Amino acid sequence: MKKLFSLFVIIFVITMSASSTLQLQQPSGFQFNDGALIWNEVENADEYLIMVNGEDYLRNIPYMDGFIQEGQYIIEVIAKDSQGIYLDSSIATYEINIDYDQEAQIELYSGQYQWSEVMLATHYLVTIDFDFYITADTKIDLDYQEEVVFTVQAVFPDGSKTAVFSTETTD
Image 1 (cartoon, one colour):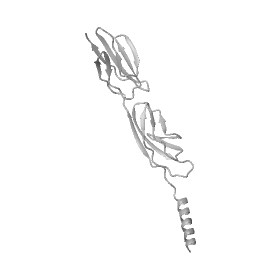
Image 2 (cartoon, rainbow, N blue to C red; image 1 turned 60 degrees about the horizontal axis):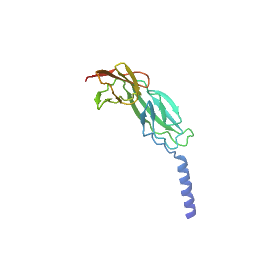
Image 3 (cartoon, helix red, strand yellow; image 1 turned 90 degrees about the vertical axis):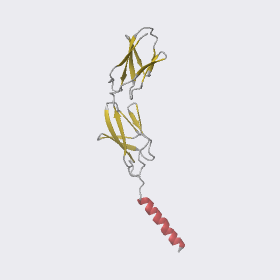
Image 4 (cartoon, helix red, strand yellow; image 1 turned 135 degrees about the horizontal axis):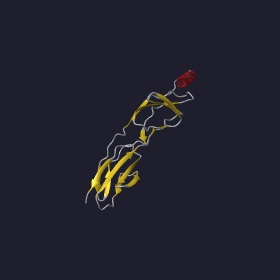
């Protein structure tokens, strides 16, 4: 009798585990940098359905790039198992707002011009009178002894630029 009961329990457990499919975890850990969105890999997922403002993309890695144009992006990600062993994850939503209409604050500090970082800028165009510089940094040494006109313009991944920020130095 005990053997029959044990056999019944084993068959029941096997039947129940075979009929219940697990759901993949929801994607998480989103990070946006340099026009690309990454997230943590979901265990047992081999594809990600990525919906960006209503357009669908299918990727096999937790990565999506091309977010360089100004605007709002609503991104929804679903982890998928193409073999059908696991159910699709629930939808994870991430929002990106790219605003290139920003201003920088310029200061002269200990012989260096410094300016506030402009979010998403790839580099800066700097002019000191008629000298032209390109830098990814937010400061530049100034060796000029006379009055100069100093300007900074942030450049974004799509090539667009902010307005010119300027200041004048005097002796």
